[in-house]
Length: 257
Ligand SMILES: C[S@@+](CC[C@H](N)C(=O)[O-])C[C@H]1O[C@@H](n2cnc3c(N)ncnc32)[C@H](O)[C@@H]1O
Image 1 (cartoon, rainbow, N blue to C red):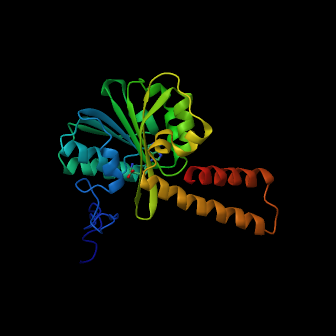
Image 2: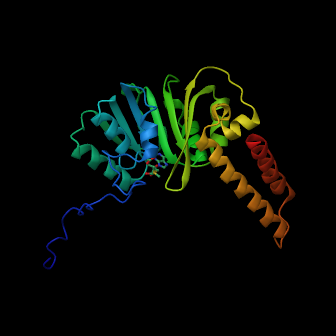
Image 3: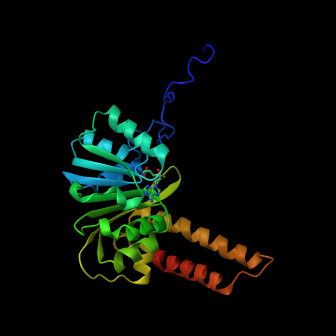
C-alpha cells in the first residue's frame, strides 16, 4: 500500500463474514445460521416476504436464490445494515425481486408490495411487539408473521393474543449456547391463552420437545440462582420482584414435573 492510494475507495469487503456457525463455517446468504434456516422453513412457498430488521439481507436473499419466495422487501432502520443488505442484493443480482428500504419497522412495507409474510428476527420480543404495534396500519391482517424473538417471548405472545393472532407453530432451538424461539402466527379472530401458555408457548407446552425441556431446565437453574442472590443481597429486593421470580420458578418446576 502506497501513500493515500486507497483513501477514496469504497471500504474493502472483509474476506469472511463476521459471523460463523456452530461448525465454524462462514454465515451468509448461501449458508444461513441454523436459527435463520429454521425461520426460512416457516416462510410459505411463493411468499412475498417483508423481512424487517434484515441486517445483511441474508434471509430474503437466501430464499430468493432458492426460488422459495416470489419477491421480498428487506427493511432496515440503521444505515450500515441497510447498505449491507443493498450490497447482498446487488451481488446476487436480485434488485428486481428484492427491494431494500431504509425505514423504521413496518413502514418498510408499501401497499403495492402485496406482502403475504413478514419475518422479524433476532431482536428482543418487546422490540418485535413494539414494531408490530406501531406499524399496525401497514398490516392487512392476511400476512403470516414469522417471529424470532431473543427473549421477551411472553409480552410478544400477549400482543399476538390481544390483536387476534393465533399461534400456528412454535419452535425452540439452541445455537452457539443460546436458546432461540420461533413463533409463527396468523390473524384468526379472538383467541385466549392462559398466563402459563403466554409464558411457555401454548404449542410448545403440548409438544414438550427435548430442546424445549432443556431450555426450561436451564431457565429453572437461572431462576433459582436469582432467588438465592436475592436472599443474600445486602439491600432488600422489592417483594414484588421476589414473588415474580418465585412464581416463574414454581411454574417451571410444575412444567418439568
Ligand atoms: C441482530 S440484527 C438481526 C438481523 C436478522 N434479522 C437476523 O435475525 O439475523 C437486528 C437488526 O434489526 C434492525 N432493527 C432494529 N429495530 C428496527 C426497526 N424498528 N426497524 C427496522 N430494523 C430494525 C437493526 O438495525 C439490526 O440490523
